[in-house]
Length: 118
Image (cartoon, rainbow, N blue to C red; front, side, top):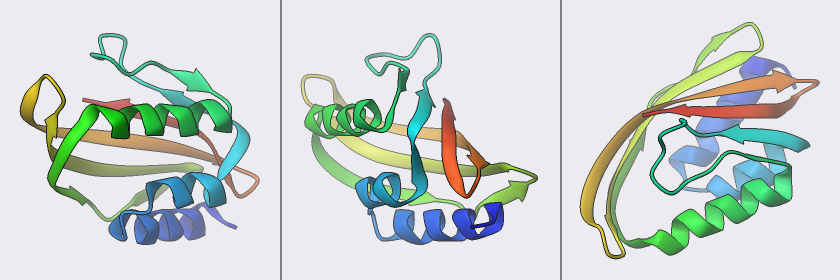
């Protein structure tokens, strides 16, 4: 897949709220997921199993999801950027809205790195 094809498929899956399916289908086995250094709770990880666990850990932190959105992807070379946001009630932390930029790097038709800025 080209970077544009990966971007289109990623966006399609995100619009359907299929985050785990996106990881399964589009991520390389040795992909890396990078959080900001001052991230409250989430940590950077490497490898698809660790990325899946990180997603499960996040889902376990959420008491209720009130809404979310994701922008159309922007493609530049081997990179995909999307803006996204969510409105969640977190266990023990209350309701919070969060907006972020996610940057994905594609190599050989697979996502090899995701990095979040919030």
